[in-house]
Length: 215
Image 1 (tube, rainbow, N blue to C red):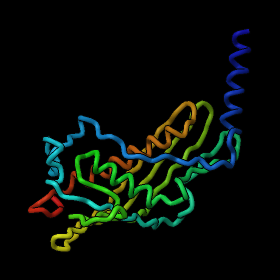
Image 2 (image 1 turned 90 degrees about the vertical axis):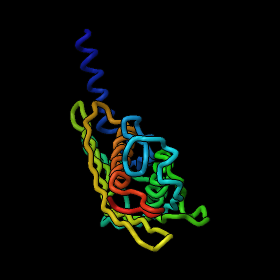
Image 3 (image 1 turned 180 degrees about the horizontal axis):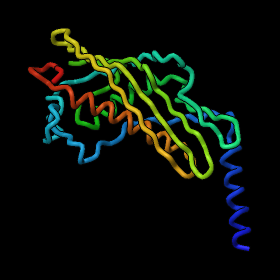
Image 4 (image 1 turned 180 degrees about the vertical axis):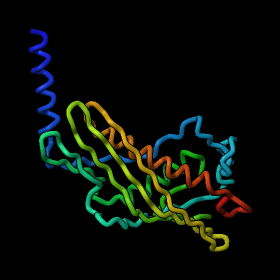
């Protein structure tokens, strides 16, 4: 009897995994991940230290991120076990403003004086970018769902003091296999990859005489 109940339960779970939510749009809530204590949140040159000196007091205005993807409609799709798709997206189907806000929030978490450029006011650095690849996909199989995310973006930081610029291309991808699909798993993986990208930006730049420079 126990084996029979277990079989019925497994079949029911697989049916839900294969059929539930086909054609729906799953809106992902992307947010800046709080840096871990091990990440080293010190000086802007990447060394450990007090976060209060991060950026040496420079203010950063984060401008828009242009959506330069070839497929600029949705982020990707979830392939259901027995056919059909659900689609991943962000609010208003516009990842550029979402990434811009995530960048500003991440910099603030790292101790920088950062805010969206639309907030107005002069800033020492204007940060903007362009999304070249920004995708999330999931494929449900028997007893597992494989999740993959990819990001590729160009970033430009312009110093107001002398008009000089720092340009960088940030790429990242990740994959994860989970037993039972939850949209939070996709959100979490994409947020993690974004945080790694922005960490690369900070790790490869420094402040020199009030200007942001490449190391």
